[in-house]
Image (cartoon, rainbow, N blue to C red; front, side):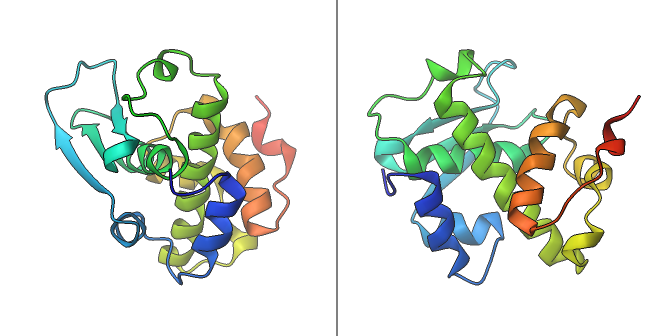
Length: 158
């Protein structure tokens, strides 16, 4: 565990001058590997004690999995791989890792695309990273906080 809280990690990252996931991972001395050795229902696998994680090479959204597992390495102190919580998608640990992952991705997306925060488009962002539609409300809340914007609720009408 490198940080005690998600806010502590995000505050420190703000000072680094980059939101590129690979640069952040390297800065914190964490390593990752793509593997075909994970079952299809396991997208990623973290071993926080060794600051290592693995990404299933068959995942649809590898950037999300990379950022998600990265946060496990920053915030979790388990000596065991985090398999227990991976089966419970609503667990606090998983929600915190999702929040951190989306925060990095949103900030990096805005930086890389050169758009102004108020021009952030939730649908384009989700399509760019191949994210599931069911994640959009969660992403919206994080984007509003991370970018200091308000996203119209009409984006979620059917």
